[in-house]
Image 1: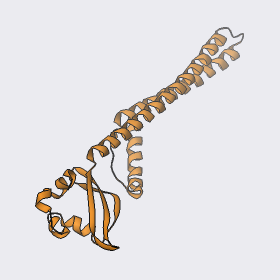
Image 2: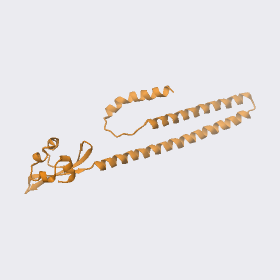
Image 3: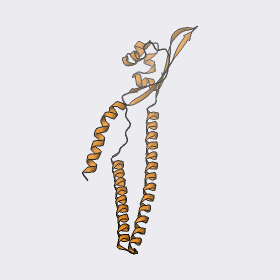
Image 4: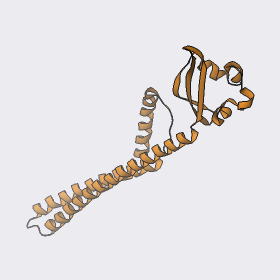
Length: 194
């Protein structure tokens, strides 16, 4: 018996030699029940407390007759942890990539708006008539309002980014959809109380 199997079952190889599976796995009735009647399986993961095990079972045949099974149990906890860390890292890289795109696009939009304001100020200062000056000042007001919206959007993104923490957990889409209206409502409430 391999060390991972010894950890999972809670017994050493020498204690289990010559015993049938019901005796060998007496401390793990859940395992006996789960695999009762199964003669072959590949890469079935079983989580036990804070460990993850991978089970492989193959039949032993003697002249075509089923004589028993070989069960291989591997402790894959470290691999699972590494996979989860790799996923979190990939998600973080994607988040950084998205934020870089938002910053690039926003800076271009801010630059264009500032250029529009600057040229409108120049045109207003050199306007021949009060009507032309009034039109240019109206353009400046629209551009300033647009910049305020951009800055408010950036602030919202920053607030969301600061409040966001990644955690991996199982969920059903139905459960998630049920929580969505409350989450959106809370976000709107926080936004409107500024």
